[in-house]
Image 1: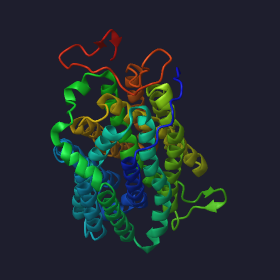
Image 2: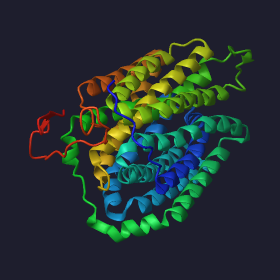
Image 3: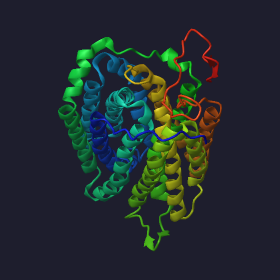
Image 4: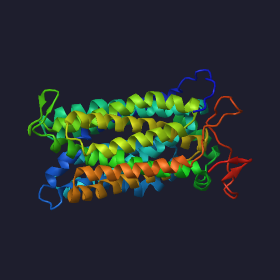
Length: 442
């Protein structure tokens, strides 16, 4: 793994810190509802012929509306600016959480979860565009890692809190999440006022990165594939299938002397998501910084391989302890992947450019995986059991690893042995993108 000399430590810009703080508040709330949503949906789908598929449909509805509205969110981000779109999206998700808390039937639950997907795509695309535009080039990995860590730390605490709050009924956690989203929007509104004014003053002066230019890079094409795999596994199967497996497979067993019963089995779902998030955040702490020094590709490949192996093994675990270890290692693989992958896309965009469509297309790829993953794996689970469902997921992740094995590095040294700048040569979409200035790119 070739390295570069360490550069002087560059501090995180204040506006990045604000987005990280907002991400943490959002993540706490999301972590609270994540292990409960499949079980909440199961209450409404108990009379269905294939309840696992019906539950997966609720998760996929969120991803479907994210997918459908991603192009709109990209255009709105370019047109209105990142922070207004971000705040609007967060408030829409908050409204959906309040509505879900008072849903009366399966159809309402499905529609309200779909509404949340619209808001989610608005704030996710705008946040990624904001980070790409504001992050100093030499610390893009660290910026991506800080943002990811805020979500992950919240996701460690949130699922356990959510499982405990479930004793008060399933509706209370959704009300808490909605409230946390309103708080996050308020943080951004108050703390980023000057940034909004500056961006509005610059208006259309920032150049736009065309999607066609991004598609000319082999790294961007590989990122679309690995984002699909990550969406399938992390945002789809992990949220829809893993909690059901955790809450049903180990009843009657014991975890380090703690007996798992029908009454407390929901805690296993929360533990599964928490240890996944713990492995994730531990990996992010080193992968984000290492990718700034050693390049993005090595970390991305390691993450995908680890994800594939341990995700594929999850459904075959008969011991609750081994199950949780597999979840933690799968989470570590995800953490090793995510920050370098996001930083690689930011490398292509460069600092100061508007890139809403580039970011929204990446999100669409992940959302497509998040939609198809739970639905198809749910069908596999109904037909052949959880074990094969997780094997299929591991195979999808492996395809992402194969794509990156052929992709170029994006975090290039300015000279042999020199510091890395996190940028590729600009590709003219009218020429062969595989060769630019004599350098093989894709």
